[in-house]
Image (cartoon, rainbow, N blue to C red):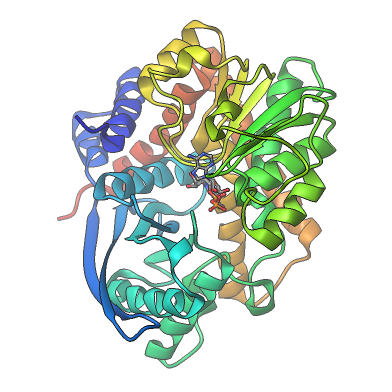
Amino acid sequence: MKFSLVKMVQEQVEKAAECIGVPEHIREILKCPMRILKVSFPVRMDDGSVVCFNGMRCQYNNVLGPTKGGVRYFPEVSEDEVIALASWMTWKCALVDLPYGGAKGGVICDPTKLSEGELERLTRRFTTEIMPILGPHSDIPAPDVFTTSKTMAWMMDTYSMFKGYPEPAIVTGKPEVMGGSLGRKQATGRGVAITTRELYKKRGKSLKDVTIAVQGFGNVGTYAALFLEQMGAKIVAVSDAFCALIDHKGLPVDELMEFVEKHTNLKEYKKLKHSDRDDVLYQDVDILIPAALENQIRKDNVGEIKAKVISEGANGPTTPEADKVLEGKGVTVIPDILANAGGVIVSHLEWVQALSGLYWEEEEINQRLEKRLVRAFEKVWKKAREKSVSLRSAAYIVAIERIADVYQYRGLFP
Ligand code: NAD
């Protein structure tokens, strides 16, 4: 039977809701996605043929505000995955006190096989198809796996053309030249580094010479590696969808980032021996950062994990079964909804800037990000102590308490 991500997130939510006695009717609401729009649409390919693509957008819950979440282009996009990711966005936004609900979208495609023109036409048509539920006060997309600031520029332009006026607040993660926030590109990786540093601080330790392996050398993984290296840590292993590079003396993060920027992957990097891509997970390191995809640390491979801390850059990289094993082994997991919340925090700042027309310096953005994330980390840390639960359960408890409180005030319509 195929592993269900929705089931996984529901288990995480149920566990937390039970721990704090959330009323039954609110638990019922939290189990179900509010809205899913599934679309099929034709795109003209460069050779003149027409291909039909399937995509979807899920808005999981909007009790706290307009829904927010990325759009993913990937061959394995599924309804289960999109609902689970939209659900995680809901808890993440609640946890870091943003006025947002959660959403996610995806198109089933292999973007590595599409030309720039094909990607543009696909993006514009997908945007048009889901436009009835988009809006700066209803649902605001952002980049995710295999979508970039360029994708967001096409989405913004398409939406604006239909409306008849420019609407920069319709997406976040735009190019800086058209109102993308300074610091957005680095924000998720910066957040992973900040939350990891906070954990070490709580233990009275610094990150000096701490060894780190990073799975997924994309937007999140590269910047997490860069900022952690700047904090004194040593990055000894990185991987992407094709291979892993491992050197326990330390990898040249700057150089690898430049390489990936130019060549898009690590496949052509010849200065180091290539290892199997999954070897990165099993290195004898202090910290493992899964920053690729969900479902990477599972019952079948958790026994091989040697890291003592896992900082989840990706959404849903650890299954609940693996989580239990890690807890039993005394491994500390900084959960995804906390560790990778830096991205949506700065996306919120981008949205505020677009709505107000007032743009901030990068220093201001980074300070606001740091303040919000450290505050959330403190809340989670305190809750974990108070309830004697893992950081993951504590993060869900903090998030669900906020949502349940808002439901109590708003009541039920009609
Ligand atoms: P990305 O497309 O920039 O990078 C993904 C990286 O993972 C690429 O290097 C890809 O080659 C690699 N990869 C894919 N499959 C792999 C595998 N099996 N093993 C090793 N590497 C693999 O995407 P991203 O934006 O960095 O997102 C990565 C994860 O972080 C996703 O789970 C995403 O949902 C999550 N996330 C992203 C953001 C953001 O702001 N970009 C925010 C929060 C969470």
